[in-house]
Amino acid sequence: VAARRGYHEVVHDHFNNPGNVGSLDKEDKSVGSALVGKASCGDVIKLQVKVGEDGTIQDAKFKTFGCGSAIASSSYATEMIIGQNITEASKITNSDISSHLKLPPVKIHCSVLAEEAIQAAIADYKTKNSSEASALRGTP
Ligand code: FES
Ligand code: FES
Image (cartoon, rainbow, N blue to C red; front, side, top):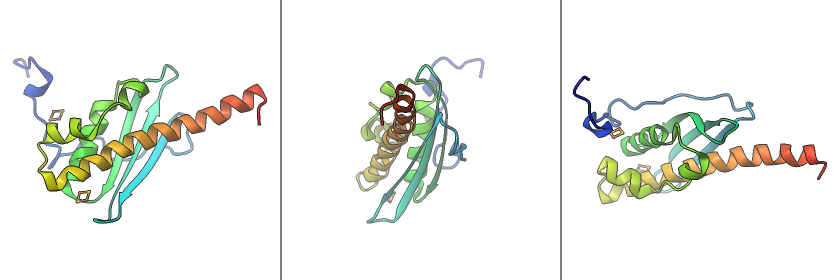
């Protein structure tokens, strides 16, 4: 640990030891939730983000019912977005994920699912909070 210079000198095993598995409180206004799936393989990713008032993602959790690559993609995705602003996080693409995890071509769609999950969770957070904002302004 003392010799740790760069973040990536420590390679996490997202396949065998995924991080950030779990759930956040769906009812919490600061939590955005997503459930995305791929019909052809039947895999499903549930991903949630907790966003602070300044737009920074404070926490992220996932539960993936699917293949190892989908689990690893979700794990890496949550790891990347914690501490990022939601604008920054929504720019993450599946190739950021697949190249980091060195996914083979047949597993690229697993990382696409993780990208979609990030976007959908952020969109859910925005929807939840924009309706509240317009309610406060008195617009229907
Ligand atoms: Fe690079 Fe986990 S292996 S962040
Ligand atoms: Fe479909 Fe991995 S095989 S998400």
